[in-house]
Amino acid sequence: MSVAGTVLFGYLLWYQHAALAMALGDMITAIHDLGHGFAVALLPANLIWCFVGVLIGNLVGVLPGLGVLSTVSILLPLTSG
Image 1: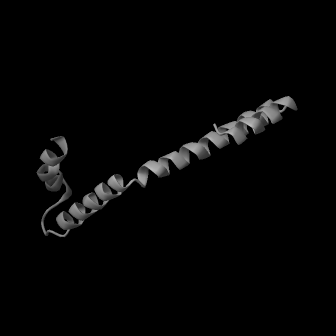
Image 2 (image 1 turned 90 degrees about the horizontal axis):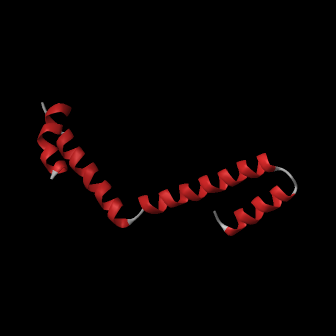
């Protein structure tokens, strides 16, 4: 929890608003966790792997007669290695 969140949490507890303080503390924690998730997802390495996955999916998806089951069977050795 950030310093501002801690100060606000203590301020609300001082005024005997424990339920509101807990809800606000949970909301601040959720926003912090959401920001952390975006920070991890937007790392260059993760973006590159997302691009590679989309590229492979598009290349395999345009092949005629190749369904989902056969595609998973063909690409399974790449993911389990």
